Image (cartoon, rainbow, N blue to C red; front, side, top):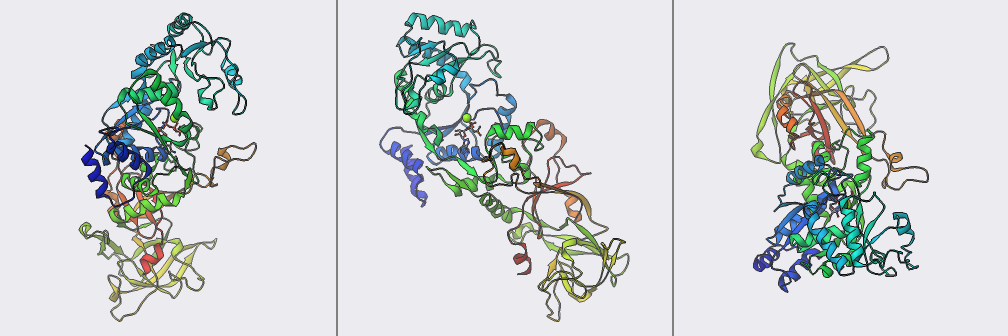
Length: 576
Ligand code: ATP
Ligand code: MG
């Protein structure tokens, strides 16, 4: 095992991150002879891009060192948890491309945790406290002021055992008692001021049903769960670093397998929020269409929007692991997506905001097929045929009646190339009573078929188009940032993060025209929809417009495309 580790490291010429350094040190010094990590989501919401970072890290590290990763549901709070989330979490991890060694639940350990709590009571290291949560908070002191001992702190072991057992039997009301570790009420680390281990909660648990009415707190459950599974490296986010000594304390007092905790900086991205509580609020209060709304920073939201698992993994790799908090620019996510889709997405032509064009010198009733390249980045994708005819649609933006200098698209008297087709020159326009252009008249040069003039004549602009009679209709959804401000969590007095929502984050275009080939796009079938499987849409580049994919709600009869991201520099590309 150790050998694999060293070889693995040698194979990569990149510098080790601090977690890799720790693991290699542990393996080399014989502190462990294998690597077992875990990803421990609380099933109280869907996974977001921050979790993706943690997943890539936990699974990635184990893989690199020939180890394994457990999936553990940290289900110690029955009130907020649900099997819907358990299923969605597994689906998202699989979709990201990872598989776990075993699925575990903190609730599987409730019996063991209870026994250990009894053991701590017997050792004089835990007691039942009758103070209210409010009193406990007040008596905890502050960083500079020591806490005050609870009047119940010196109960006898027998009394504590009896009360704890009766707490378990359901004799007491919620909030009337807690079990606390007996450590030191004036400890400089506040976590050591007799932390709460158990609270009473008469609530139905999604797995243990009504068996328990006392539930362990995170600090008491997490380290022990790691230890039970034999986790070698328990990786979590920075805010838990002050909990680490307590994590070690419980393990030490119980004399169980010494798992160790290591912290890294959580992923923050600008223009979005990442707390599950806030994401849940967006869903519940209808600010978005669901957890998988393409504007959501959730994994299923990204998937529906057209992000690929590879793009997300590359993003996580690119940002690396830091020990200090930072904020990553949203554009880095888009960069990773473009990088991948540029390689794999087939090109198509689509007109989002159509205006009609008539080629007056093209024979009426005639049409022809032109050859288009599916993906210039991948020869193997080959070519396809697109129909051309006398009446076309082009983008409204690609015509100006009175163009400024350097406007190289279509304008009266100006010649442009229709992608893959011909050079055309605008001769006149028709308008309605309000002055809106309803039709653009052009002539074409038959000698320029395929897009080049035999006389060497150049045009400065190339625009995309679709044949009016052959085009298929579709709805297209364009997305902008969900929040208008860079740090939406920071709301001024009297406002909340909701006040920072971007009112224009969704733009729905209902009269788009696509080249006919796109009617063959595969839709999500009814069975998949019912089974709620992760559905991977086909990805396309609509030339000059961005990357798009079919929405999971679309049908053959009602095509809906989502724009995954724009092209960085569409103009340079097509004119260059
Ligand atoms: P939230 O605050 O969004 O509810 P959480 O930390 O409570 O997140 P958990 O389900 O407990 O969510 O998280 C599971 C794992 O994912 C934990 O190890 C946690 O540290 C990690 N994680 C959560 N958010 C991030 C993030 N933004 N960046 C990196 N890791 C994260
Ligand atoms: Mg949590």
